[in-house]
Length: 281
Image (cartoon, rainbow, N blue to C red):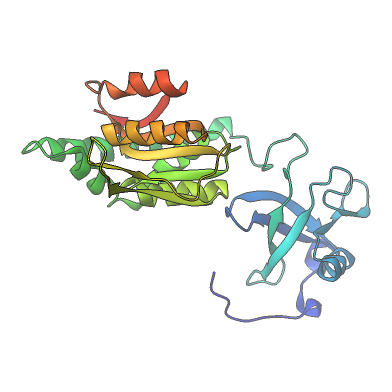
């Protein structure tokens, strides 16, 4: 976010909201919108003094600190003001969950009447996928070609990351990507989950296969999400090495899967988790 200028507290327009200013609260690491709250001038001053988010409760008519009973405080990292000086964007480090229901964000519902918009966009994405897939069939192009073409569409790029985030656990320690086209998608997913990304690289060895995956920065007992372009022997190999090192695999995602692939059943039997595929061919 590019900052063009800075203003002082006295320039904020509290009068427009009868002494209150709406505050959009965003998680600094994942950029997810967590909640909408309100501040009066006192709440803002307390936030600035403590570095912990304080708000004004319109129902209780009192100042309150986020997490004062649950412990789920919000440590403030950035404060931005909109162009009209009447709305604040607070970027925070969220301890625990933001929502009182136990969800991480308060925005975990959809509007029934808005489903048509969701469906229309999903259909748009499916048409893009079909278009690229039809192009890849010309001349028997590989799955790698298909994957590389998919990433030329920014909305598809984000859509894939969104689907992976929605369909995989959040209680992981790290996101693992294998070398190749899965890396940019995995980076987006890691950012959404607020977890570090580890890229596994192959290196030559004297083993019978001639090479193995170089495991680094993943410790015994850690839980990981693996993202790869396709189900392959390389994926099977890394799964074996991770399990052998005591790493727990929470989920496996492949951008492209094929009904002809026999490795999926093998991996499922070894790890006990299903492979979530974005595109089936």
